[in-house]
Image 1 (cartoon, one colour):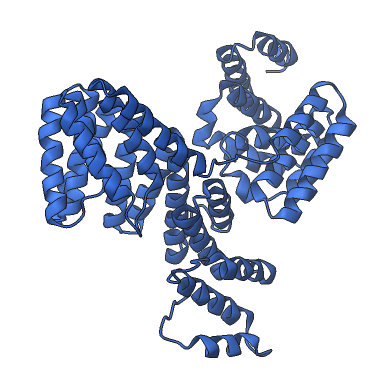
Image 2: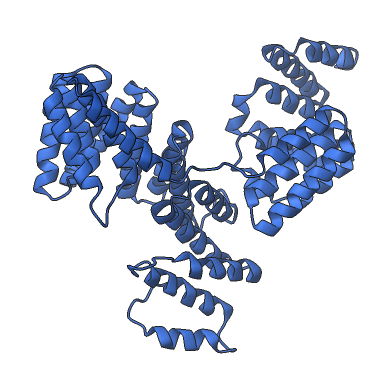
Length: 479
């Protein structure tokens, strides 16, 4: 969709209200009105236009517009709303509409944008490992569509995530190529950011004097090109602190605080971080009372920041799990169904999916294979691909259930998906189950014999000796 800031708003609304205006055009008008709202200094509430537009796209099944709106809303949740959990859910909704290996360039670009959005959301939620995973994937996606500039920008974010995780050698290996790219482009701002990443690495390696010297160079460059921000000044202050020049550390933390409070780029997270750093520097100077005041300021700002709440249905999901463990399958299924219905009405795709997964776990445990397969057929399977903690386990259960119902071709296809999925490496036990499913599906006796061995070995590696012995007894006289 095109954003046209020049068209008359009244004319757009007149067109929107005409009965003959196609739904796609109405959605585009709301898309435009949302963009205009972002420039409204009093409200900046783009979602009041984009959410109705999204519902229209969903209802009409307009895939292209639907995807574009999930991109815009994901970005809005992150940039202006600080609603990172909602951003993840919106990004997942958009990604579920795009085939994993799409050949359509527009879809592949959208896939990269949404994956980047997930990375940023996880980053803001301090989930560094997940952020790194999605930054890495997004960077590769941009490379695949020949957008090397964005690929390298996101690579910088991945490097920062490596540093946060203490993976210094990995960060250094990536940083050299990243800096070389921006050096070739003569992009002083990005080169300075690469050097700031080096400062972070130096501090991790306790090379404090070297870190201070380089941090001051970064500060000078950013000041000259008009890009000096509170984050950079905070790292300069940190370098002074570790070099034990506490007076300069205090001075730079105070400068950073001034920048962080300026409109329209006010950064509340930087206010918290800089006040905490300032408190440490003041403590080192013996200024205990001032340090306490700085910590109080940090706490006051932090208490006003939105605290992300993951999955409002957590307690309900835990209740399903508890009932299942107690053998109360009917009650567990009833509770899971209630979660699915409530989350569907609320438009909470992530919670709905987890409710359906809990339903499958319960049905499988009571050996209701038909119920498992029926639930699988009705659930949003594409969305499941973005839940790494669930996807392999669910597919193994569904595969086994399909085989039990005689739906062997479907079971074979699903089993092949599992065995070729890199996420299978995360669980030896799920590997073992996948091989067991393959044994049942495979028709070649020689292949069956090999697969039995794999299943036994992986169960042993998973320290599930009882199941390894069970498989040995089950297939002893057959293969």
